[in-house]
Length: 107
Length: 122
Image (cartoon, rainbow over all chains, first blue to last red; front, side):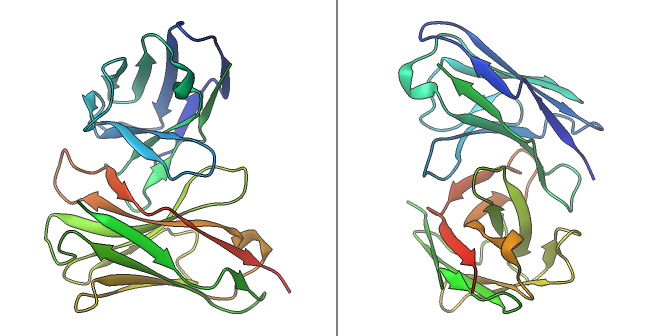
């Protein structure tokens, strides 16, 4: 099973600041890593797929990078609506499909 | 535009079977390009993949739940379903159905249902 470890667990920033979230895989997932945003009471929303491709309708301030075992989600300038929980996910080697434990981005 | 909608009982007694159905609209559930899956999220916790099914009926399960889970598809009704047996309070969660791609570059979950809260309690 591929374990995804996200850091930090909680990130406290202010609107306008830059956010950098990390996801590390226990073994290579090539570039087959995705990022999701989840707000309270809502289903997760796909942000980034294949490590660096923005999903449809996702603002350009969101970007992803990485390959192999180390990945980063960057939000260049935080908007108030960006404060949420972010999960990384892999389906490269499955079953099982695995998710990271999440990073809470808070003000 | 694809839409997924979970349905099923919101309360299940301990030791009984949790049954949920996901209704798919706006796209074919028979496409060879996609899997259809279930993910759950206990209150205040992270996401856990449960199972997925492919258009030909191939099934994939989380080893941690494999002995209690079954997933099935009814293409005529455009639905797929989840059964989880012998439930306990630890199975209390929001259950999501979602679609994920079969081809490299499309492995992600691109569409999700809104989620259904299932509580296991007497």
